[in-house]
Image 1 (cartoon, one colour):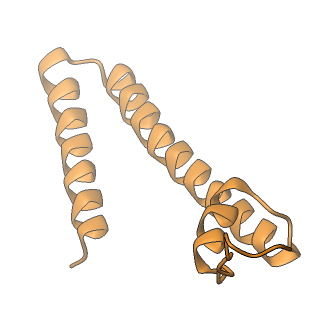
Image 2 (cartoon, one colour):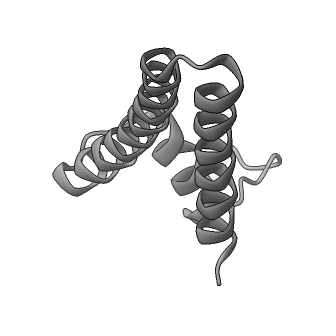
Image 3 (cartoon, helix red, strand yellow):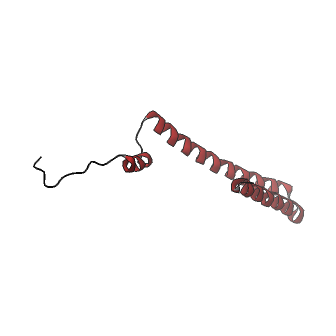
Length: 89
């Protein structure tokens, strides 16, 4: 199992345990369901923002638009021409 899958299993297990604990100990299933839904929506929002950010970075590079990240790496890859200090040019 990958690290991401393991992390998702742990988070899901904790959420389900929290749902069970809240519904049995406190006795309010509606509050437990609202907490579970809020946690799942937060995870979904974080994943969506991450995927949109990576998609925009790839799309900008594919269209040829310069961005800060791509110019940092391409500047290192372009060969630098040596300059001669003693030259009259």
